[in-house]
Length: 171
Image (spheres, rainbow, N blue to C red):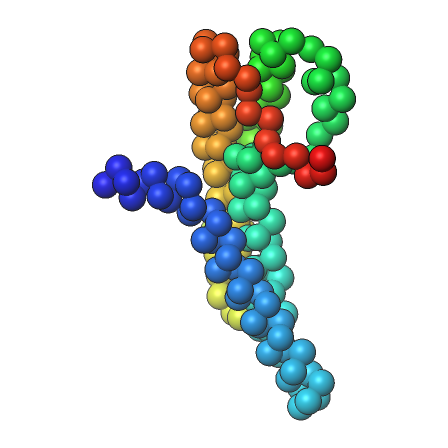
């Protein structure tokens, strides 16, 4: 069971991103063919692409937290000692954690209002709550990844190891 959780922790977001991306690309390709060859398009295809993209964005944001891949200005980080650098990363994780908790609360509020009033999508005619859930799911995943990042940084601080700064985009 521990091996399954470790595998989900390592690859779960990547597989979810792949599934939503494939769904987006296939649906978009089908809709382009239908529009260009048959002069007909559907409302549901556009909605599937839109909501797949929303899930991609929120799950991708959580993945970026895990990989420390969010855009940041780190010029000063090259000039400070490793201990202070770790503390600054931990401070950033705490600030982001607080923001994510507030955003999670308010995104649940929106989701609950949608459930209460039975909002449905225009084309698919399914509950809008399925798609509004992307935001709290994304923030919950971010909170999980921030806690993991904070604990990893704390371990690095105690052991004196250098902090994980994420992979460089350009070298």
